[in-house]
Length: 54
Image (cartoon, rainbow, N blue to C red; front, side, top):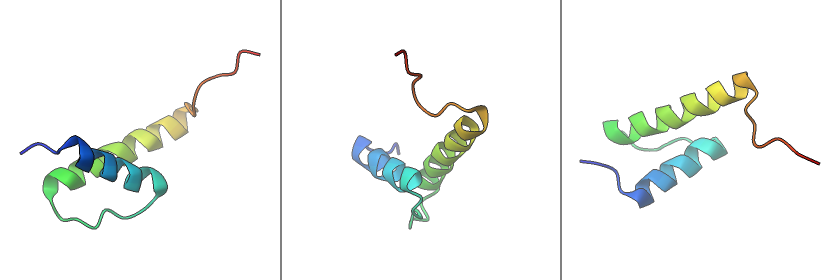
């Protein structure tokens, strides 16, 4: 069963705001961990948004 776009968005918001997931569903936990890992990788690589051109 795939996650609905609404559920993906709620998990994304929880991950980016630093909240716990509050679910034991393996699919939701995997998506949450994927988002957290991408955020960690971006933070380490210095990819924190777009560069200014002015």
